[in-house]
Amino acid sequence: MSPTNVNALLVIVFGLPGAGKSTFAQALAAQLDITHLNTDQIRFQLGLSGRYDKESKEKVYGEVYASARRLLEQGSGVIVDGTFYKKLLRNKFKALAVETGCPLYWIEIRANAQTIEYRVNQPRPFSEANFPVYEMIRNHFEPLEDEPCLALWSDILTLEEMVAEAKQFIIPSPAN
Image (cartoon, rainbow, N blue to C red; front, side, top):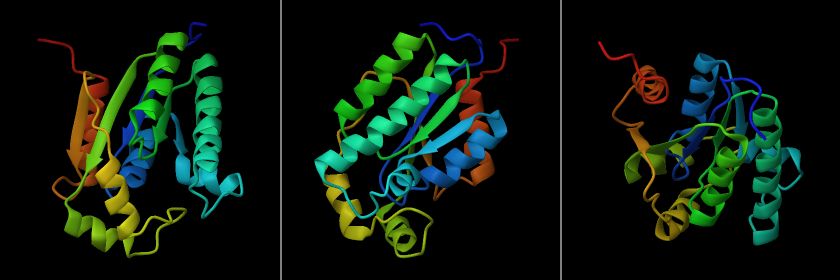
């Protein structure tokens, strides 16, 4: 099915816990005036807080996928924010973009381990990841390959600089 709105696009914001994905994704969604879907919020809404077994992860990512599909089919843009540390998870959303005829943009949010350790020890809405969870996901992270991807370091750039770079990546200026 093709989108009814040429502005429909899918942005996947991914990276390790504590990197700053959600803060960035919220800011970018506000700038682009599109919907932001967050895996941690969906987990909470589904009553699956604290559950990270395979079945729970499948339910969370399945609900995010279904919500993103509905939005794209309505011609709306959507930003999906989650770790997406496994290729299998990313492939479903890659196929969704193809099926809906929407452009897909990958943005990886990064930060050094010291910054992440500090961040995951602070109260954060919805996120339950602590430093051992970060280390486990880091050790099992499957890098994105063969896809254009914008990597942004949240401990080097300001939020405003990150959003500006992302907007340029998604909506490049016309060539002079």
